[in-house]
Length: 122
Image 1 (spheres, rainbow, N blue to C red):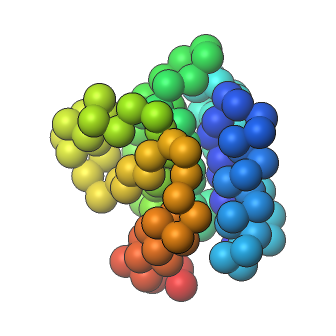
Image 2: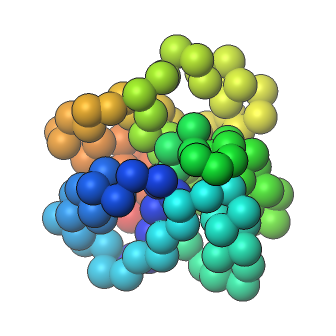
């Protein structure tokens, strides 16, 4: 399985990669900004997207919106500000999940499995 990790903090992106590896993901693409995420998604196929909502530079929600306009992909936002993005996600990206930083490994694993089952990717 292939995951797209959109995160501006290198250590967090590597932690997410490690957790996804434990869940059976074997390949990864990475982006650190909104523009890089949109450009990096062009022509790619992902089984899962994880994204930080606040990127420097850019906006993770806008990046994921642009990517998901072209195709349906399960999405988990990994953020330190879950309450700040909940309303925006309900209207812009219904079905997207939110996991708070610091990441609880068990919660993250459950969320990944649930989303993959819902999208028929598990």
